Amino acid sequence: MHGYGPPRVTDFRASGTTIPIERVDQLVEQLHAAAKPRDQWRIGTEYEAVVVNASTGTAAPYSGEQGIERLLAVWSERFGWEPTREDGHIVGLARRGVRVTLEPGGQVELSGAPCENLHQSRAELETHVRELATVAETLGLAVLGLGMQPMSGVDDIEWVPKERYRIMRAYMQQVGTRGHRMMKQTATVQVNIDFDNERDALRKLRVGMALSPVLNAMFANSSISEGGPNGLLSYRGWVWFDTDRARCGLLPFAFEPDASFARYVQWALDVPMYFLLRAGRYRTEHTGMPFRQFLQAGWDGEQATMDDWQLHLTTLFPEVRLKGYVEFRAADSQPPERMLALPALVKGVFYDADCLEAAMDLVKRWSAAECQRLYEEVVRQGLRARLRGIEVRELACELVGIAEEGLRRQAAMGDDGEDERAYLQPLREQVLRGQCPALEVVTRWERDWGGRVAGLLRRTAFRPS
Image 1: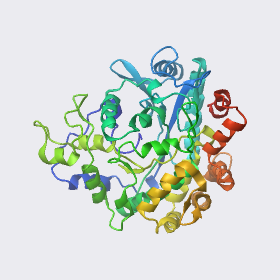
Image 2 (image 1 turned 120 degrees about the vertical axis):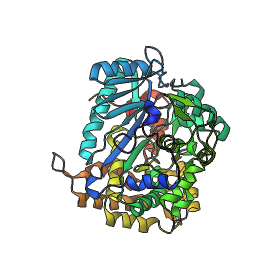
Image 3 (image 1 turned 180 degrees about the vertical axis):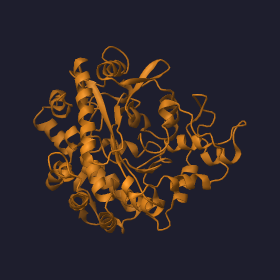
Image 4 (image 1 turned 120 degrees about the horizontal axis):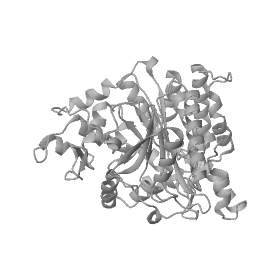
């Protein structure tokens, strides 16, 4: 997420803070230093989308005249972006503080600028959708608002030629069975928010962790994969269950009263490393070594630095992540008309003290084990799953109500005279019906589209205008 925290050394091979780590407290102090006063809080959204052949629905390759690299090249030429290259290949774009990057299977991600309100986010998203859809259309491609590649199997999707991904894909085969699916087939929308002190950050982490299965149910949007219904509503959520349990999922300590920055750092220290970055190249001698071990003993004369720690933090994938901000990661990607519902929900709940307290009251009795069981149910049942006898749909309706009150109080007005509650309206209508996006898609696939991809493309493709 650009505009928050340190440079993204993972994407651009930057070399910034080479300060050696001499004590663990430095890592805790860094989180304290990231706190911001309330008047400096912003909201940032990261949007991922799958790109497919507009005729067949199969995944667009990276290479070739109808490939993702060609799409980036045309996009940069037509709309004034600066290409980012790795080993001669275009792997991203940059323009005025906003960046477009690629996920391992060619999913296109917009890392938006930190915005004061969602009206600014809407303008950014509308520009992104218009430009991307326009360029895709000229190449015979389509960009889909889904959480999953709908037609192509994992082995049929070309890898983006980034060294980081080459290393990760080899390691993931050792630690789980679905890592390649996560990397190549899935897409998400993520939201990043600020905090003003440790207590505030840990409260947001606690509430966010507990609500992750509810958010997944509300935004489930990956019921079609490899050419047909897969039996789940959030296949993307299910994929994460066996990607790499050491660095993914819910964090039990976040549910405990003594949760702290120090606890998060201790957890992160014990997660195995993927790589180091030295002189612009990734080094893999450390792959599989817990960061704690590298910090304590070094390796071949190398001492751990703050750069190394920042790089390590970007390779941790819990459902809610702490870096220089709090990142929510539970939702499947959405069509453009629903894309801003997640940041609206998060901003409404987490940026008003009373609303955050109301959300805490909703989840404070839920244990980590209960939330994990609920997550395993919602990927199949969505809003119909139950926790302690209560249907998730009821919890979702209450959460939307809390968010609406938060946004009403924040009173950020757009040019049309409406506040940010307008971005929640599609979500409110959906949860009242008890129907997540995935349920609508799979129902229409079987009832209206006759199992043909053309209907899916018409319903979910981004439009140029």
